[in-house]
Amino acid sequence: MVLALGVFLGLLLPDLAHAVRPALPFTVLILVFLPMLRIDLAGVAGHARRPLLIGAVLVWLLVVCPALA
Image (tube, rainbow, N blue to C red; front, side):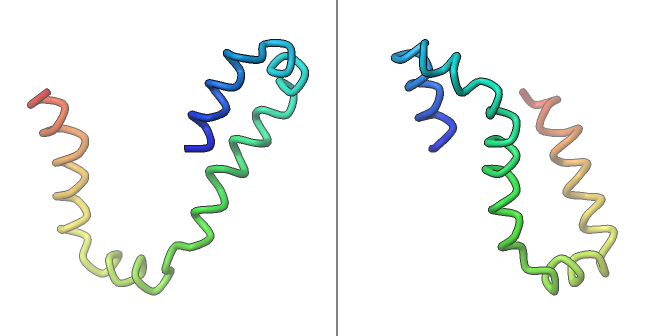
């Protein structure tokens, strides 16, 4: 939501977009990193104990879905 709002503000206010352009990589990094802090590490470890399920999900996401599209 924040990223989409930033795109529209950048289109509406190009001078402001040009002024804050150097901060863009850091801002995107923060917006991607902060949700990762909420990951349940115990749950991730539980999934790591089932490698066949993880492999099946990866095959589905990386092979089957693009083939269907």
